[in-house]
Length: 178
Image (cartoon, rainbow, N blue to C red; front, side, top):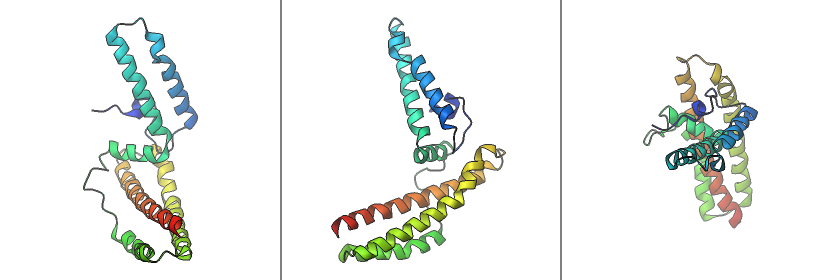
Protein backbone atom coordinates (compact mmCIF):
# COMPACT_ATOMS: atom_id res chain seq x y z
CA UNK A 1 0.00 0.00 0.00
CA UNK A 2 1.44 3.33 -1.00
CA UNK A 3 1.14 6.40 1.17
CA UNK A 4 -1.73 8.76 0.37
CA UNK A 5 -0.03 12.09 -0.37
CA UNK A 6 -3.03 14.10 0.81
CA UNK A 7 -3.02 12.29 4.15
CA UNK A 8 0.78 12.68 4.36
CA UNK A 9 0.32 16.47 4.09
CA UNK A 10 -2.87 16.45 6.21
CA UNK A 11 -4.70 18.16 3.33
CA UNK A 12 -8.14 17.32 1.93
CA UNK A 13 -8.26 15.33 -1.32
CA UNK A 14 -8.90 17.95 -3.97
CA UNK A 15 -8.12 18.70 -7.60
CA UNK A 16 -7.43 22.33 -6.68
CA UNK A 17 -5.39 22.39 -3.47
CA UNK A 18 -4.37 25.57 -1.69
CA UNK A 19 -0.97 25.96 -3.36
CA UNK A 20 0.42 28.07 -0.50
CA UNK A 21 -0.59 25.44 2.07
CA UNK A 22 0.89 22.69 -0.12
CA UNK A 23 4.19 24.53 -0.44
CA UNK A 24 4.21 25.34 3.28
CA UNK A 25 3.75 21.62 4.18
CA UNK A 26 6.49 20.65 1.73
CA UNK A 27 9.02 23.12 3.15
CA UNK A 28 8.15 22.27 6.75
CA UNK A 29 8.64 18.55 6.12
CA UNK A 30 11.77 19.22 4.05
CA UNK A 31 13.32 20.83 7.12
CA UNK A 32 12.00 18.16 9.48
CA UNK A 33 13.27 15.28 7.34
CA UNK A 34 16.52 16.83 6.17
CA UNK A 35 19.23 14.16 6.57
CA UNK A 36 21.74 16.68 8.02
CA UNK A 37 19.51 17.12 11.08
CA UNK A 38 19.58 13.39 11.74
CA UNK A 39 23.28 12.65 11.21
CA UNK A 40 23.70 11.32 14.77
CA UNK A 41 20.60 9.11 14.62
CA UNK A 42 20.84 5.33 14.34
CA UNK A 43 21.34 3.91 10.85
CA UNK A 44 17.75 2.61 10.93
CA UNK A 45 16.40 6.05 11.79
CA UNK A 46 18.60 7.68 9.14
CA UNK A 47 17.13 5.27 6.55
CA UNK A 48 13.61 6.10 7.74
CA UNK A 49 14.32 9.86 7.48
CA UNK A 50 15.70 9.38 3.97
CA UNK A 51 12.51 7.51 2.96
CA UNK A 52 10.34 10.27 4.46
CA UNK A 53 12.36 12.96 2.65
CA UNK A 54 11.89 11.06 -0.62
CA UNK A 55 8.18 10.62 0.08
CA UNK A 56 7.90 14.36 0.75
CA UNK A 57 9.60 15.22 -2.55
CA UNK A 58 7.45 12.76 -4.52
CA UNK A 59 4.27 13.98 -2.84
CA UNK A 60 5.04 17.61 -3.62
CA UNK A 61 6.04 16.94 -7.23
CA UNK A 62 2.81 15.04 -7.79
CA UNK A 63 0.39 17.34 -5.99
CA UNK A 64 1.93 20.59 -7.27
CA UNK A 65 1.42 19.65 -10.94
CA UNK A 66 -2.25 19.69 -12.09
CA UNK A 67 -1.98 16.84 -14.64
CA UNK A 68 0.00 14.60 -12.29
CA UNK A 69 -2.34 15.44 -9.41
CA UNK A 70 -5.37 14.49 -11.52
CA UNK A 71 -3.80 11.18 -12.58
CA UNK A 72 -2.79 10.53 -8.97
CA UNK A 73 -6.32 11.08 -7.61
CA UNK A 74 -7.83 8.93 -10.35
CA UNK A 75 -5.23 6.25 -9.61
CA UNK A 76 -6.03 6.38 -5.88
CA UNK A 77 -9.58 5.42 -6.79
CA UNK A 78 -8.54 2.72 -9.27
CA UNK A 79 -9.85 4.63 -12.28
CA UNK A 80 -6.77 4.46 -14.48
CA UNK A 81 -6.28 0.69 -14.43
CA UNK A 82 -4.95 -0.88 -17.63
CA UNK A 83 -7.68 -1.90 -20.03
CA UNK A 84 -10.12 0.67 -18.65
CA UNK A 85 -9.05 3.49 -20.94
CA UNK A 86 -12.04 3.52 -23.31
CA UNK A 87 -13.26 6.88 -24.54
CA UNK A 88 -16.92 7.79 -25.15
CA UNK A 89 -18.09 7.01 -28.68
CA UNK A 90 -19.40 10.55 -29.23
CA UNK A 91 -15.92 11.95 -28.52
CA UNK A 92 -14.26 9.45 -30.87
CA UNK A 93 -16.72 10.42 -33.59
CA UNK A 94 -15.95 14.08 -32.93
CA UNK A 95 -12.20 13.57 -33.37
CA UNK A 96 -12.46 11.13 -36.29
CA UNK A 97 -12.26 14.03 -38.75
CA UNK A 98 -9.14 15.33 -36.98
CA UNK A 99 -7.53 11.89 -37.22
CA UNK A 100 -8.35 11.69 -40.93
CA UNK A 101 -6.74 15.09 -41.47
CA UNK A 102 -3.66 13.89 -39.55
CA UNK A 103 -3.40 10.85 -41.83
CA UNK A 104 -3.58 13.12 -44.87
CA UNK A 105 -0.85 15.32 -43.41
CA UNK A 106 1.34 12.22 -43.15
CA UNK A 107 1.43 12.08 -46.96
CA UNK A 108 0.90 15.74 -47.84
CA UNK A 109 2.26 18.22 -45.28
CA UNK A 110 0.23 21.44 -45.46
CA UNK A 111 0.82 24.29 -42.98
CA UNK A 112 -2.74 25.56 -43.53
CA UNK A 113 -4.30 22.24 -42.53
CA UNK A 114 -1.89 21.95 -39.56
CA UNK A 115 -3.05 25.38 -38.34
CA UNK A 116 -6.70 24.47 -38.92
CA UNK A 117 -6.42 21.20 -36.96
CA UNK A 118 -4.52 22.99 -34.17
CA UNK A 119 -7.35 25.50 -33.93
CA UNK A 120 -9.95 22.73 -33.75
CA UNK A 121 -7.95 20.95 -31.02
CA UNK A 122 -7.63 24.23 -29.08
CA UNK A 123 -11.38 24.81 -29.31
CA UNK A 124 -12.11 21.25 -28.21
CA UNK A 125 -9.66 21.61 -25.29
CA UNK A 126 -11.19 24.89 -24.18
CA UNK A 127 -14.68 23.34 -24.25
CA UNK A 128 -13.45 20.36 -22.20
CA UNK A 129 -11.72 22.65 -19.67
CA UNK A 130 -14.81 24.83 -19.27
CA UNK A 131 -17.02 21.79 -18.81
CA UNK A 132 -14.90 20.17 -16.10
CA UNK A 133 -14.01 23.35 -14.16
CA UNK A 134 -17.08 23.24 -11.86
CA UNK A 135 -16.50 19.54 -11.12
CA UNK A 136 -12.83 20.11 -10.23
CA UNK A 137 -13.64 23.18 -8.16
CA UNK A 138 -16.47 21.56 -6.23
CA UNK A 139 -15.01 18.08 -5.72
CA UNK A 140 -13.57 18.64 -2.24
CA UNK A 141 -16.97 19.76 -0.94
CA UNK A 142 -18.93 16.84 -2.36
CA UNK A 143 -20.46 14.24 -0.05
CA UNK A 144 -18.68 10.85 -0.22
CA UNK A 145 -21.60 9.17 -2.00
CA UNK A 146 -21.51 11.68 -4.89
CA UNK A 147 -17.73 11.64 -5.39
CA UNK A 148 -17.61 8.47 -7.54
CA UNK A 149 -19.83 10.14 -10.16
CA UNK A 150 -17.60 13.24 -10.17
CA UNK A 151 -14.51 11.05 -10.44
CA UNK A 152 -15.97 9.33 -13.50
CA UNK A 153 -16.47 12.74 -15.13
CA UNK A 154 -12.88 13.70 -14.29
CA UNK A 155 -11.62 10.37 -15.63
CA UNK A 156 -13.40 10.92 -18.96
CA UNK A 157 -12.01 14.45 -19.12
CA UNK A 158 -8.50 13.20 -18.32
CA UNK A 159 -8.62 10.54 -21.05
CA UNK A 160 -9.95 13.03 -23.60
CA UNK A 161 -7.19 15.51 -22.71
CA UNK A 162 -4.54 12.80 -23.13
CA UNK A 163 -6.03 11.89 -26.51
CA UNK A 164 -5.91 15.53 -27.61
CA UNK A 165 -2.33 15.75 -26.37
CA UNK A 166 -1.38 12.89 -28.70
CA UNK A 167 -3.01 14.78 -31.59
CA UNK A 168 -1.04 17.91 -30.60
CA UNK A 169 2.20 15.89 -30.56
CA UNK A 170 1.46 14.60 -34.07
CA UNK A 171 0.68 18.14 -35.22
CA UNK A 172 3.99 19.37 -33.80
CA UNK A 173 5.84 16.80 -35.93
CA UNK A 174 3.95 17.88 -39.05
CA UNK A 175 4.48 21.57 -38.28
CA UNK A 176 8.22 20.96 -37.97
CA UNK A 177 8.27 19.24 -41.38
CA UNK A 178 6.29 21.82 -43.32
